[in-house]
Amino acid sequence: WLKKKADASTTLYVFFSGRALVDGGTGAVSLMAHDGTSAGPNGLYSLRRLQEAIQRLPIRRAVLFFDVSLEPAPGVDLPTIPQPDWESGLSDARKDVEMWMVGNRKLQEAQAHDQSKHGLFTYYLLRGLQGVADLNRDETVTAGELCTYARSQVIQITKEHLRSKQEPLCLPQVGRGRMVRIY
Image (cartoon, rainbow, N blue to C red; front, side, top):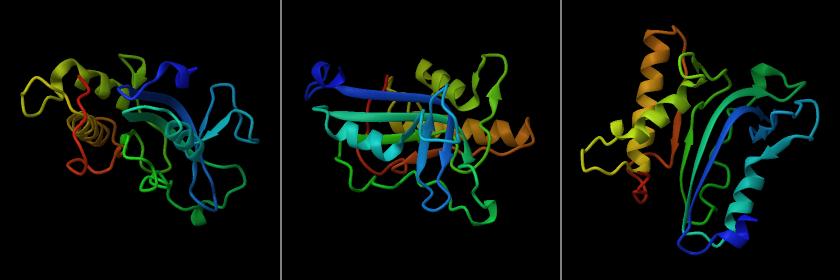
């Protein structure tokens, strides 16, 4: 469907909120559908597969947002599990995948923003899109500004108010690569 609707001027935004599994051997991340199970492949969608699907599209660029709680795949020995591999294939990807905004860099629960009924990272992405993330006040929110804003807010709120830790990730690091206008 998307391949028929997209063209060379299309900017694709992919947002996923939910759970993700980390492979115990490679650190590969797979997104879990709301009705999926961690015990089998049904309902799991690997990031590698997502990248491959995006690369087949005739698009100009893509910006990916993931607000996920990360958990190990079943049966994994926790002390030996590698860090989630968010960057696998990133350098191999076409230049049209501009930025990944990930609400959780490591194995941990994503924190909720109770008043808005969203994940904390999603809440600050939405706030940032309202213009709050326009750090240089040029009336344009870029992907880098949005991720920088959401990341700093989530780190601060989880540390100061929730007495926990959640560290979002921006790939590539802000300031490396082109600036994508989001809003």
